[in-house]
Image 1 (tube, rainbow, N blue to C red):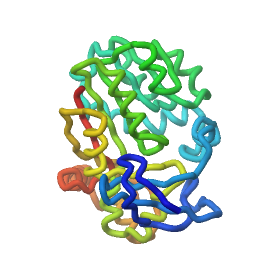
Image 2: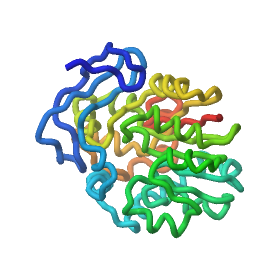
Image 3: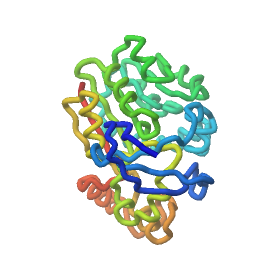
Image 4: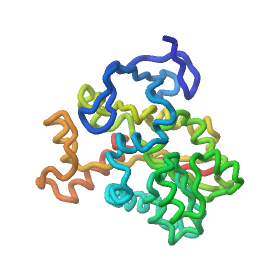
Length: 293
């Protein structure tokens, strides 16, 4: 089958994985094999023809990806990460701003920043969350193109662990770009394909990492290509690591995910140094993009 890159349209594509994909938690895999492709031109990795579009709008998708659709469970899972995101962005970049979070799920991040913003806008395909989102945000849309069509301009766009899920990253980022006012800022977080686990134990980690929920896998080069394609002229790509040293050690020991805090041999200071090292050397779990329109 001939496959062209969905980002740059080049035909020079390599298959880098052939096998089942993870559907939800560890061990829950598809019954059939799929191909993961790598573009030699723009360096993005991608999967094609996995699930119908309405799957990503369903509660089944959220149950597969997050193991829950309960709002309180989202609060518990994301509160710590949202604290880190606010610290990374800086309150000075959020105060008195019109903020839209693209792919916000239950809207946990927007709840954190609501009281310091001018107002907040939630973008979320899953109708399941629209009720609670309407309680906390001035506007709620299913997709970014609806925000663009509204002619509302925003100061700040955020996107956390979302772009890897969408069927067209180009359209997704283009909608964000078009919703920003001139001088507006995008803060985007997405998994880093070249993280430490991929570098050290690719045979085990990659089989876990490739999943039905993630259609795209970005590295620094592929993210640069996409940002240039959209028209962002002023941007930086840095890194953010979400896991402690025990996650790495137990992955290498057991060849499977075991979570965080699995040993008390290393204190908080050691973990901060470990995370800082990975972030400085582009081996962190996530890319962190800051872009200005």
